[in-house]
View 1 (cartoon, rainbow, N blue to C red):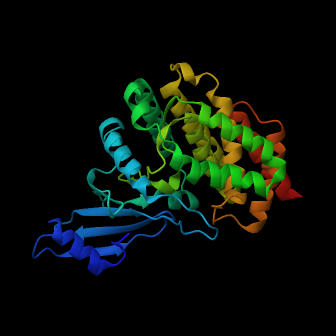
View 2 (view 1 turned 60 degrees about the horizontal axis):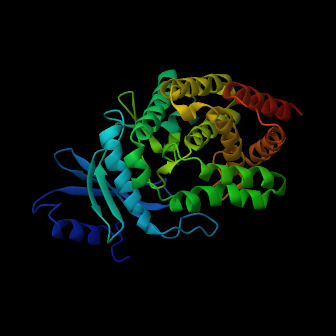
View 3 (view 1 turned 120 degrees about the horizontal axis):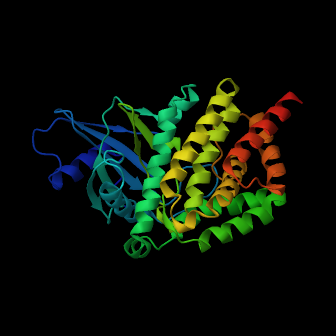
Length: 343
């Protein structure tokens, strides 16, 4: 990879040579933090508009070896174009350009007055409408892509990046780290690849969601594929419940908000044939992600060592007889966490 977009002089030369920066343009550049799989920078022009550039890395920025081909930027660019057409208006940034040779994607920047939803939740601000929006957004993506499966199933058939950025580092790595969970994870990973029902975002979480003027805006689509929609539900739910675990002062409100997310989502997809049986799989994916985020390759940084141990123990018990519906799963997880905290 010749171009490094974190080298701002080289980046300015690159953008100028392609006509993206005109002579005399005053453009500021800053590195954006938070991602482990990409270099990400923000460009801001004097007239107020801006772009975000993402460049895929072959070795992820985590403490263990974790590799993935940077060609996945093609998936992300393709996914953003699809979302611009099919997701609710205003819920994704506008696509600007793609450079396959330099593994680079450009998109319109969200105005700086936005907040990251993960930061909002960790600050204790639980806004019910955000959870309903999140459920509606996911349900709309799943429903529209399922309705157009003749095209989306073919266009997003490749599950390579989902496997090496999600199933392997989350489920299969955790199965090796926690032998008591191996049977659960191996079965779940196999089952996940059998379902081909809708587009799957694969990273549907508060971290990848901005809030601007009360509206949620979804980012990061590099593992999008046509597969099992239950994974997205479980991935999101695990983030909500991990934060409920970490923040006892808002735990009950977060638990109730997580149910709102589920209901808003299910209302969007309930008429689809594959909706039958999805809830029990989503519950198992929630458990899988809850354990993977304390024992996999990408542990949640805000959980303390004692919280990680408590979550590990609570989830292992629930894996022995997983709840088959989301409200029961939420209630049982919260009860286990609180019981362990008292002992």
